[in-house]
Length: 77
Image: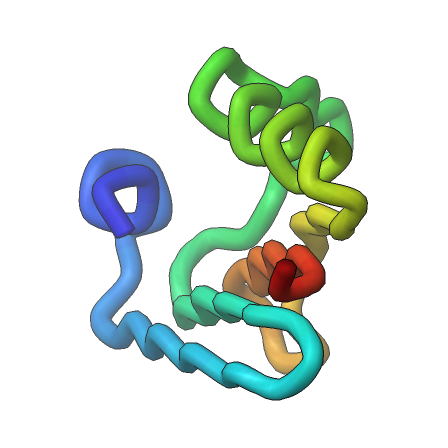
């Protein structure tokens, strides 16, 4: 959420938390979107590493209608 505030120029941010056999967090905004030459910065790289270490996944992409969609998930123990 702090990245949305600092970088996205968004007017809306949505945070969804789903708990099933895994925990999934999805952050969606209506901001400027991920640049084409996007390289993960340290905070996002850290999220990716933590998901991988937990046996989960991490992705960040442009939203279908612009903005950005970040998904992080990991299986529950």
